[in-house]
Amino acid sequence: MSEHAIKFLQEWIGEKCQSPALPIKIEQHAETLARECAAEAAEAGIPMEDIQEEVGDIQELIASRLEDAVEIDEDAPGDASTGGRAA
Image (cartoon, rainbow, N blue to C red; front, side, top):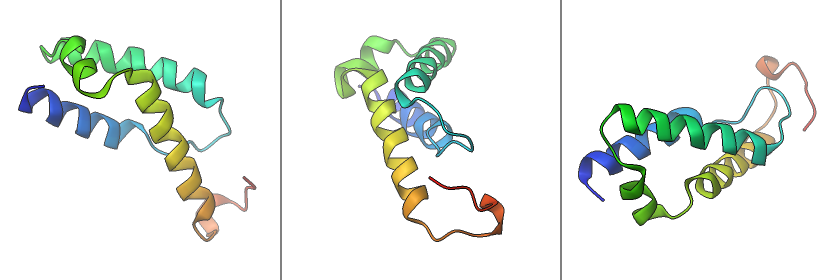
């Protein structure tokens, strides 16, 4: 995978794969984000084949990152910004 593709994917995942404010179905959200990633990669001139060659199924990678983000959020001590929401 090209350096450009690696940088794109790292930045994109870092920006998009955050713990959601509302409960979501991770698989459905990952599917939506995978389509968005593919579209933005195409706009940047990066073939999805280059990304998939390196990381495999992009939807699975995104789902994994979303799960990690939710776990980190759940493990973090609550503060006033969460509004006391339960996990």
